[in-house]
Image (cartoon, rainbow, N blue to C red; front, side, top):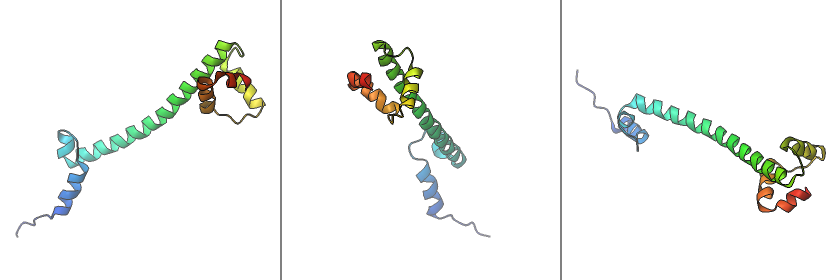
Amino acid sequence: MTRVRRGYIARKRRKKSCLSRQGAHSKLTRTIAQQKRRALVSAQRDRDRKKRDFRRLWITRINAVIRKKGIYSSYSKFINDLRKRQSLLNRKILAQIAILNRNCLYMI
């Protein structure tokens, strides 16, 4: 029985997935698939981590401005008072106000 020559479609599919990689990550199909899965997992993890890091940054900025002026002794008391007043400002907006216009934050 004669050997079947494979068409260009499978080669095209493999070549498409191995762009800009090094070593076995650009040569071996299974390794390429593993690397792709790992990249997707890392991307998801880092998107979640980015949200956490920004929230920590906003809290730190608000806390620094509040303590510097001496209005509140802690960040948690400030946030508690905002909740009691049913303020619709989130931490991101409060942090921007704290940096750009501190007097406005003191009025809040």
